[in-house]
Amino acid sequence: MDRHLLFERFHKIYASNKSSSFSFFAPGRVNLIGEHTDYTLGLVMPIAIQLGTVLIISKNNHGILRFTSLNVEEKTSVPANANYSDFRNAWYKYPLGIFQAFKNSGFDGQGFDMLYYGDLPTASGLSSSASIEMVTAVALNQLYQSEFDTIELVKMAQWSENNFVSLNCGIMDMFASGMGKAGYAIALNCSDLSFQYVEAEREGYHFVIGNSMKKRGLADSKYNERVSECGIALEILKKADSFSSLSEVSLENLDKYGHMIENDTIFRRTRHVVLENERVRRSIHYLGDGNMYEFGQLMNQSHQSLKLDYEVTGFELDTMVEKAQTCEGVLGSRMTGAGFGGCMISLLESNYIEPYIHSMTEHYFNKTGLQAEFYSVHTSDGASLKELL
Image (cartoon, rainbow, N blue to C red):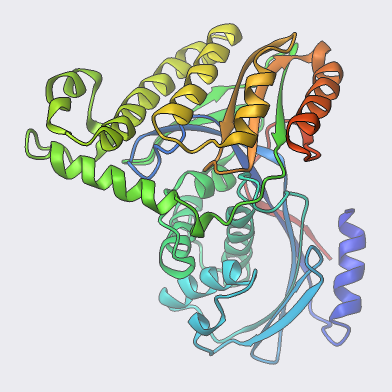
């Protein structure tokens, strides 16, 4: 939706507010490779994408936080001095968590009028929640004049997810939304937040997202179970060496100490994490050199690992990915995000996008009865102020 139309909607909804209003944008993200490794403090490689969340915001003089979402056609008000934990059962729990993080840092008491609009499909694995959190964080940073740097805002957003929303996620989604750079992927080490930008957009190639339309409630899924399983593996391996995270375990360590993990399920979870980190290391080299074929092969291997060892794909995602990997022009395809539904991503030659989407749509509907959606995506800069009116 055009931002000027959003400004018009904002001033119609909050007609009594004559203060200056601001427009902010935060992108969603798609992870190219490095799945379920962020919360084990490992390596990931996301890109910020052009789809995301716009926030129009203005201060008000009422001491009330007034939220409107055009996506769910819902308006609500929360007293600025309220106990925000009483309001955690609706979409606005995501911005409220950011308000709580700022309150924890000494910033509170002001009222704001807010209008949110996003073009990210919800519950799809493209981080609509992180996009909402980051657009709120950069907006409050500006309006409170708090001068936090972007990585501090990213940490606030992760705190909100972990402690307010109660999802044991890693930092990747917020980091990509905050630190994205057009043209590049982010190779991020989640243990110390060291990162490098890796050129990801190459002439003649495109990334295409396929939305399975299989919805999932992430906090209610087996996501937290996988976090727990990785914790069990770490505790076992700590008996052999001084590992502080599962992602410190190398292939050599796995060969040496893997026998200590007697439970086959826990061993396979560990094997995925170890091998996925290695795939990211190789991806930095291949993608950076423009070797899209080899990078595509790593995408395929990642999906197999997520399917067989980590068991987070499911019928719908497997149906999409296995078909995609046979389509002409496709170099690689894999599920992306937490899994259990949501999205896949394919790397393909640009000339094949239209026949790919046609073939995939027909095949997937015939197999599942679901109408998939496809988006050709390009990279985006991270969350920022866009306009003042």
